[in-house]
Image 1 (cartoon, rainbow, N blue to C red):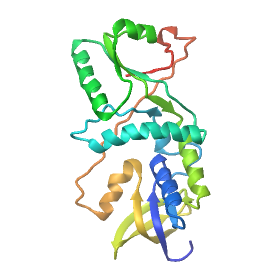
Image 2 (cartoon, rainbow, N blue to C red; image 1 turned 90 degrees about the vertical axis):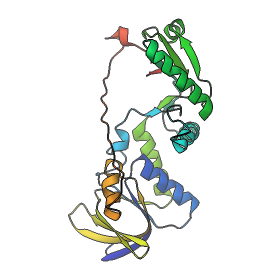
Image 3 (cartoon, helix red, strand yellow; image 1 turned 180 degrees about the vertical axis):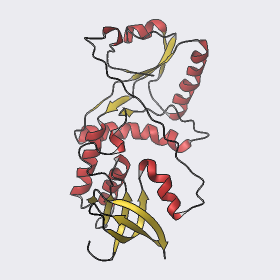
Image 4 (cartoon, rainbow, N blue to C red; image 1 turned 45 degrees about the vertical axis):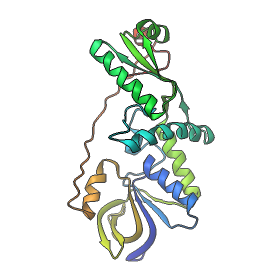
Length: 260
């Protein structure tokens, strides 16, 4: 890529789980596409990006209602099933642990009914109400008034998932450019021109027929390069994690399920 202006078919911004998955899927469905993935981090294979900085929970699809978020409600259930299939086929560590959504008082207990009805509406199989004693039988260290058991919930190893998608896409001819930052986006006669900066500080304009914005927490900022009046803005939420050892804190030990 030494020309001052290079033409490609598809530009994907971000090599996290979304960017890598889209790149792999496009490369398998449309043979011969010129696909480039631009990633500002120094790598993809060792957990350098945002996708690997999360809890790795495989959700089941009961948090989204069909009336206000029908696509999420439908696709989360399908995605749950497909992710387990993908992980099994491509040897990505994943466990269907199940989870318990707990209620600690009467007010929270009334909310469980909403989730139970939503699970039935969305097609989330096997969800059932648990009494206090049933929760204690499953997880002796959990104290709760009641709960919902969601058997399809689980966990996946995020770095392994991203790495597998990256290698599958690369094996299908996708080019990954790391340490490469997208500085600007401009529309140009039905195409999009990306101004990118390489690791050595040099810049280049690249014209793409299709652009896919998978830039994580910078997705809204980049989208506004093309549409300054875009009324969408990300609301990032930072999570905190703690690690406990069962032999040191036996009162916090769980049998393996996720507890919400």
